[in-house]
Length: 164
Image (cartoon, rainbow, N blue to C red):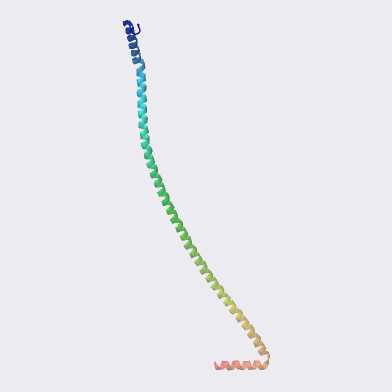
């Protein structure tokens, strides 16, 4: 029954052992444990703050990226409009230049045709004149080969000269 009714010596030594255990734990074990707990608590708290800051920064970056994307799209659209205007202007300039060039070529061709026509008419007149002279020569030779006819032609020419 000694276990149920402990003696004073046992209680004393148990109290001394428990006190000694508490002293050793309080002196050597609890401070490092408490320090580690405080460090862990502050590390968790810092991580939470950093996570919140990172979340806010991500939201800011997301908004900034959306703004940059919007600006890039607007700039791309403006560049496309400008490029389209430049292309249309180049096409119109080329069309105008081609029309002017074709008009110049047509005018040049007309002038060349007119010159060729005039040259052909002059050649034709010269050829007709040469043929007429040849025919007249042959007729006159034929007429003058006969003395009666040549006399008649001379008299006729003299009469015409007197009338004028």
